[in-house]
Every structure is written in structure tokens, then in C-alpha cells.
Length: 288
Image (cartoon, rainbow, N blue to C red; front, side):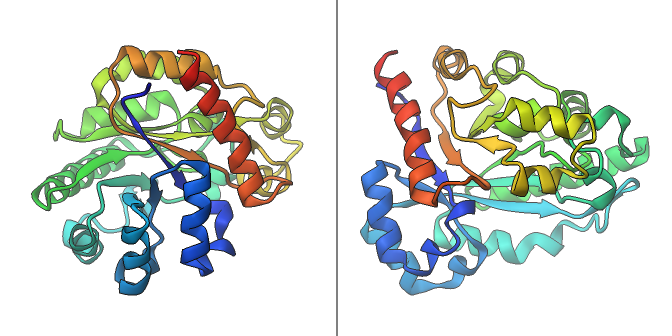
């Protein structure tokens, strides 16, 4: 029996999201109880009512921060107040912050140490903004976490450490996306050990070894192409992730947040690919 909650980042579910009632029924079949809420749903009372009646929580809202190598495009936290207010008013649990993707980093997918990087001043500026946003999120009775993401300026374990060092607000948690962490050169099990209780949110997905090697050896031009055409991120249990070791370390750390299944693009339909990942997650839950 797990102490965490399990939900869905519905990136692959774009068509299905047009029918919230059917989507909720699929969530019940999959035994998932929370979602990453799409931005249009934050103001859609009818859809929110459908989710609420189906006992589907607004587990998270993802917010991307546009940056260049010199730091955030805007360092004014008030630029984000509107979306934070809407998140708070609709009952979002976790606000997941990340750096937005950029073409200069996208060309170096899987090779963050060769890629253009934030300057020292840029890292300090991003850290200050993330710290301010964390304060604002906490004041609205929500949690915050930061998501290292492939094709962005905060991708590798080293860049993540630098960002957390630059953010002076210790309330910020780590959203550990197992797929992006592997692509960025990290080991998700080691990340849970390193960050401990600061791992406050999880995106669970796997990485296809062949697709990653093709990306790193520049047989594929960009991270985006690898994700959409090469199916870089695959169903849980079908790739490089040590699923059993990762979940065991979460249990050891007494993790009580959300574990969110996520699939970007696969040859399978949205329900079918999620069902496979769900089955693997359920198996390791039951065997613990």
C-alpha cells in the first residue's frame, strides 16, 4: 500500500480532453485520482464541476518561465499573479515551475554539458524569481516545486543544484521527472537520495535507450524530434528507469506527494499507453 497519490499528466490526451465526462470515466478505469490541469480548464466552471463530481483532484498546474542565457525574460513575479490566483481559486495542489524550452538548448538534447548555459548572473536572476514565486505560491496556500526539463537551461543535475543554491526560499520542492532526469544525465534513484524530503512531486515516465543514444550521437537533430518522432519517452518499465529501485527509494523517504504518470508521444493511443504504465506501477506497488 502506497502513501502517495497517483495521477496523470495528460499530454497525450489532447483529443480526449474535449469530452471531460468520458475523460473522467477513463481516469476511474485507470484508478488515477488527479491531473495536471490544462490552462483553459482553470476558468471552465462546467469542466471543473465534472472533475469535482468525479473526485478528480487538480493535482498540479505547470508554469514555464521564458529565459535566455542572461536569465528570465521578466524578473517581475507579478507577471505570474493572474495564473497563480486562478490556480488558488480553483483548488490546485502543486504549482510546478520550470524553464521554458528554447531552440538553442533543444539542439543539444541529451548533451546539456555541451549546450549554451545560463550565465552566473542569469542563474542568480532565475533563482531570485523562483524564490519570489515560491513565496507567492505559499501565500496562496499551494505547494511549489521545480521541474528540471530537457531542452531548457535547467536540465542536468549540476544545473539543478545551481538553481536550488540560487533560490533562497527553502519551501521550494523538486518535481522529479524520471524521464527528463535520465536524459539530462542523472539517476532518478540517486536524486531521491540526494534531495530526500525536497522531492515533493514526481512525473513518472521511462526513456527508450535506443532513442536516447540516437539523440546524444546527433543522429536526431533536436530533443523535440526525439520526443515526437523517435518516442524518446516510453511507457514505464520499457526503458532505462530502475522502476523498482526508484519506487523503493520513494517509500524509504516516506514520500506522500503525487506520482503523475506522463506520456508525451507513443505509437499507442493515450489510454493504451497509460494503461501499460499503470499496470507496471500497480505491479510494483503490490509487490512492495
